[in-house]
Image 1 (cartoon, helix red, strand yellow):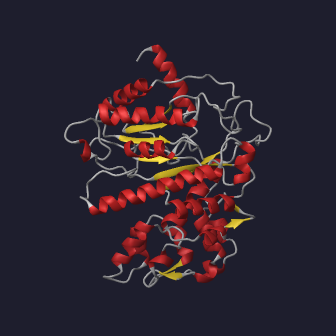
Image 2: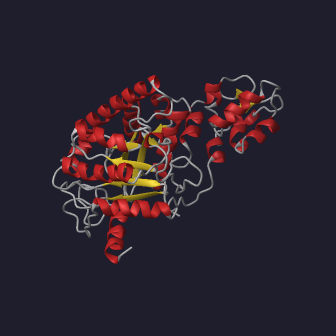
Image 3: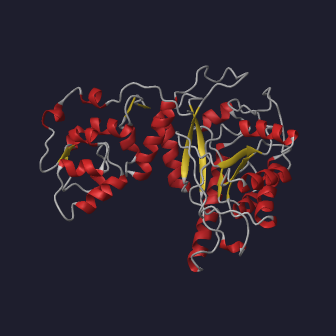
Length: 412
C-alpha cells in the first residue's frame, strides 16, 4: 500500500469509528453469482470478531470521504469542523476491500460517507463501490452500505440489490432534537426511507417464497439504525419508546446506541461531558428485553426511575424488584413467558429448562447446572428443594444483588 493510500485509510477509518451500526449477522450465500468468485459471508474460514461492547470489528469500516456539506453539531466530520479531510476513489475502496479480504483481515465492507455535492451524487459513489465488487470482482462477502439522507428512492433500491444490509441513522430520539442539532436532516425523510426499504424487503421475501429457497434477495440482512445517547436531554424512556416504534413500524433488525462523546470545537448546544458508557450498555440490555424476552415497552419503562435506567443493576433485575409480587416462580410449572422474567435466565437456558422438566422435576442443583447465574436467581425461584424464605422480603435485596463497583472499559 503506498503512503498516500495509507494516509487516506488512517483518516477515513478513524472518521468512521463513531458509527456503531455495523454487524455482519443475517448474510446469506450468494448462489446467484454462479460458480467461482471471491469471498463468502457464511463459509468456512470466516470469523466474526466483536469488541466487548458488541461492535463488529471484522469488517473494513471506512468512509468514502469525510468531507460533508452538512453541519450536524454532534458530528466530528461536520462542515465547520477543523479536521484533516480525505476522499477515496471508488477503485481505491475496491482495492482495499479485496486486498484485506485476501489477507483474511476482514469478512466484508461497511461503507459510509460524508455528503458531497448532493445526496444523490454521494449515493451514486457509494453504490459504484458495491457494484464493482459484486459484478466486476464477483465478491461474495458481506457489504453494509450507509444510505445517504434525502437520496432518491431509486438509488436506495439499487443499493439494496448489492448490499446485504442498508442503514440510515435516526441520529436522535426526537424530531425537536434533530431539528436543533442537525437542521439539514429531517426525521420525516429518514422514516420515509425506512418505510420504503421495509416495503421492498417485504416484496422481495414474498417473491423469494414463491421461488426456490436459495434464490437471491433484496437486503437479505435487513436494515438497522443508530441513535446518539446523551447529546440531548432525552430520557432513557424516550429513547426506548423511539426504538419500539422503529421496530414495530419498519421491522428493523437492530437499533444501535452510541454514547455521546464531546468533540473538538464543539457547539455550545452540546453537553460538555460524555454520556456514561454504562448508560449505553443498559439501553442495549433493555432493548434485548423487548426483542428477545417478551417485555413490552411499558414493562421496560417500569424498570426506570425518573425515566432513566439504573446504572448499578441491569434493567431486568430492576423490573423484578419492582414486581416482587409475582415472585418466587416455580421452575417446574411456570410458563416460558414468566421464566424469561426471572433475573439470570435467558432464552437458551429457559428452553433447556422446559426441555429438561419434561422428563423430571428439577431441583436447585439441576438449575445450577443449566445456568451460571444461580446466585441471582435464588430470591426469585422455587424448586422441589428450594424456597427463598427471608430473601423474598429482604429490603436489602437490591444491594445484595448489585455487582461490585468496577470500571466498565468497553474499548479495552
